[in-house]
Structure formats: C-alpha cells, structure tokens
Image (cartoon, rainbow over all chains, first blue to last red; front, side, top):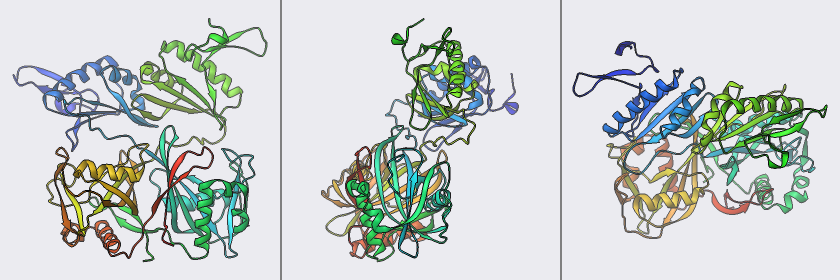
Length: 282
Length: 282
C-alpha cells in the first residue's frame, strides 16, 4: 500500500522483517520513557484492517520487550474501540474527545499508572471590613431547601489554580471581587464522585468589593452575615466538619490562626510554573 | 416483549404513551438529583436494537425536560459505544471496566460536571533520631542517572489517605516503618499527566524503624544522610522548589515551622469518614 514516507498515522508503516524479504504492516507508534509504546489514532480506518495491524504490531512489541501499550482513539475513531477491546485492551481514561486504552504485554507485574484519582473543590471564607462573612443559599444539590447559609463552594477545573478557582467561584455566585489570603485547611474524602476521591480546600479571601449580585441559576440568595450568626446555625453546630471549619475561621478572624500562603515557584525539571502552599508566619 | 415487571437492565421497558393505545420500548434508567438520567448497561445487546431504544428514550427524556443523559457501558458492552457516539454522546470518563458517555439534551447551558481533574502525589521527609534524613536514588524516571539523592515519593491511590500513602511509599521504597506527623507544604501544577493537574503533598514522617531494605525494581539505593548533606546537593540548591522545601524541612527540624496535622472527621451529609488537615499549633 503506502511507502514508508507516505504513511499517515492510521495506515501503518511497512517494516522489513529480519529476513529482509518480507514486508509487514504495523501501526505507527512512539516509545515512552518507561518501556511503553503509544499509538495515537486521530483519524478513523476500517476496523478489520485496524485489528490486523494491531495484532501484527503487538507481536513485534512483545519481541522488542515492550511493556505497556497505549492506544489513544479520537472520538472520530469510535468504530475501532471494539476491536481494541477484543485484542485484550482495557479502558484507561477518557476525555470528551478521546478514549485511552491500555494493555500490559510484559511478563513482569503491571506497573501502568492509574487514571486521575481526585476531584478538587474549594470553599471560600470571605470577610468584609465589618467582620461579616459572605454566605449563600443554593438552588440545587444537597443543600436545596435546607435553609442553610453556607460559604460559596465550587469545583477547581483541570488546569486552574486553587486560589484562582476560589476567587472565580465567589465572583460567579455573588458578584463579589476578592483577593486570595490563605488555605486555612483541607479535607480529603473518598468515594465521592463516580468513586473518585475528593480534596476540598477551605480558602480565606479578602473582599475587594461589597455589593452582592447573585447568580440566578444556582444561587437562591446571597448576603453578608455577622460571623456569629453563621456559626450559630444548628447545621454548622451539629455537623462535625462544619463546626471545625467555623472554629478555624473564628480563630483566623481573631488573628489566632495561620494557614498556608500561595508562593509562585517552578517545578523541578521542566521549570513549569507552579504554586507552593506553605506556612509563612514562622 | 417483556412486561414492565420482567424488564431487565438492557431489554428496555414498555411504556404507555399519552393516548394509552400504543406501547414503546425504552431503556431502563434512573433519575439523578440534578434533572439528569442514568442508564447503566451491564450486559451487552444488539447494537441496532440499542440505537432504536436510545432514540426513543431520548425523545421521551426531552419531553420530560431532562437535562444530562449518562450512559455507563460495561466493557462487555463495548459494541454499543459506536451507536451512542452516533447519537451525539461524548466520552465523560473511563475506568478499566467501564466507559461513561454523556449528552446534554436541554436548551439551557451544559452544566455537566467535569471528570476527575487531579493526580495526587506525596514526598516523604523522614527523620531518624540522629537528625538524619531518609533519601533514595531511583532506577527510572526523570532522576535516573542524575546521582541526586531525593525524598521517597509516590502516587496517592484513589481511595487512599494522603498520610497512609506517605507511610506506604516509605515502607515500599526503603523498608522503613514510620508514623505521620504533618503536611508541611503542598504544590499544585498543571499539564502533568495526560493533561491533568497535579497536587503534591510534602509530608513529614517520624521513623519508627531504622534498618533500610530497599526495593529493587524502582530504587537504586536508599540510605540515611545528614540533613545538611542532602540540602547541599547542587540540584537542591539550584532548583527553586527543592530549595524552598529543603528550607521548610530545616525550619521544621529546628522546631521553627508547623504544617497541617491530620484530624479524623466526617463529611457533612453522609457522615462518611474523612480527614481534615489543619494547623493545630495555635
């Protein structure tokens, strides 16, 4: 079919066998740093042709001593998912536009890394100059209809800094501008969202604006409330974690507590920008 | 075909239309608390029959004002993935045994929650009674061949407490028993693993045993090293984040720093066990 120079990502490549006389077709692939192989299929092809290429490729990778085989199928290649599973691949993870499948072909123990394991959320403790705290009542979810006044909360998006997510959620839910002060505490729990674990960061923010403009779709009401009134709610007093967090916020309000500050830094090897959260008040 | 009482999870159920005269087949489904519908297909079926049931079901769900439609396909139902994508479903997430697809059918903005967004890792600062720190050299990965002595590190599994993961990794890599003391700091970075974000917790542990038995597959060498010698390594001095963390560990060693302690608690509604990490030395 194609010559080696014209091979695209889906029609495989020709490869001379050791004898030099025969040419076999293989899937295009690249090696990773851990003895693995990655196939990245962006366009679709016939599923039977794919199965044939895949079987021939796996035979070669086993000969080569490869370990983990990754196949990334764009959603446009959805017709190839069944063929990959029939060849012994399992799902690894998926995003809206692609599905990642994986197969361990070495004799040694499977050391393939796991999928992303945690969702991350924030709760925002926002004070104004009057010592009042920003609270909301939600239209939906578990708090709907309970009458409980709670801190604005939300999910940290993939690629979003915790501090930025807290500022964004307060702006979205209540229209209030803030700046990040500290992470006061965080909580880890399990089996929370499709079985994933959950990290929830309680962030203290300083209000930079005071007029409230609530979001209509998710927020029933939003207002400034004296801190003592927030903490005195039966729900807050009775639920262990809400009581603990309210106690911490009160200590913070009275300058008797310090959490972790955000310090910009870079990662070790790639020098990517990242944020280090540390205790600065030594 | 089946009567309503005999319907299984895959062969649909019969439902009287408004006229009362006609019966149509629909997929079995359950409602969620957010106006959504979940279809959980554990067994396979014919893909064309599935497509027909799916189209009829979607028509009804639109009439009912449903918003997000979730289809969970066990890997045994891989032959139905293509039909779901052809009906406009996209991938949401996948685990080894299933693929979750989703479609937003309401007129309003899509508010479907995102997939798990973060991987979580730990680094372990382990001291012995001599003021020495536990360090390792790795067989693979980015540190391979660099000669750098580093803290034991590892990935926090889904469902695993951060403190438990730190104790486990130290035991696995160096054979040393420890107890958890504090989270000294944490770092958030982005685009680290298949595009996911990354949270890395620096944990201080107290050594309860001192004999080192290194793991052979991942660890080249493990030993106790005077802290100053660890911190004096050019890599640690030159890389901003390693320098920052070494500085924090030195302050901690000298009792001039306090991180977050782990306090068992329960979550708000379900009273599930969870861990709150807070600053206890007020």
